[in-house]
Image 1 (cartoon, helix red, strand yellow):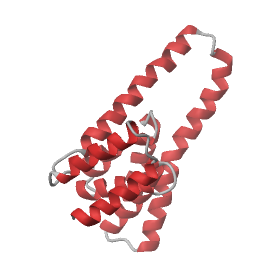
Image 2 (tube, helix red, strand yellow; image 1 turned 90 degrees about the vertical axis):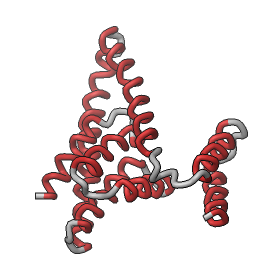
Image 3 (spheres, one colour; image 1 turned 60 degrees about the vertical axis):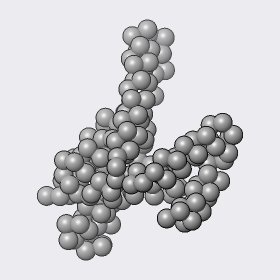
Image 4 (cartoon, rainbow, N blue to C red; image 1 turned 30 degrees about the vertical axis):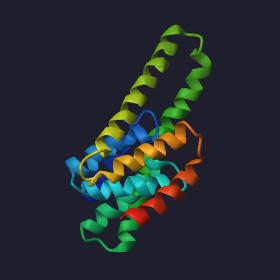
Length: 182
């Protein structure tokens, strides 16, 4: 039963996750943490941090981990949990693959049509709002347990935007500061 639930949930997320992986995070959290309780909120926050640091798209990394963790938390053995990772990863990718195939076909046919252009323009703000929702949903008391965390966030933000520090250097600096502070 959980396999079908995982498949269905991640097909839905893949279908409605406009805006990329970061936009999908709020949808994933809603389904996985709040609705089905496959993983905890703190586990999800840790998962997002690890998914950002590992190579590959964050949405796919998150789906892969959720498929594994959901089955492990249900008591399944590791080799079955790996199957859950494959199911969630494929389920997340299939809707995007199908939609992009159709969009690319029709884009060249209808790109001069004003209604088509309006529809494409309408998708952009939706993606931005989903990314903002994901950021807001991750900023809870659990993710900021002390006053050091918001300060580290602001320092990283200023280093990135104002001083154009490379993200890898920011991650290394944050890891070193985390070891010192915590």
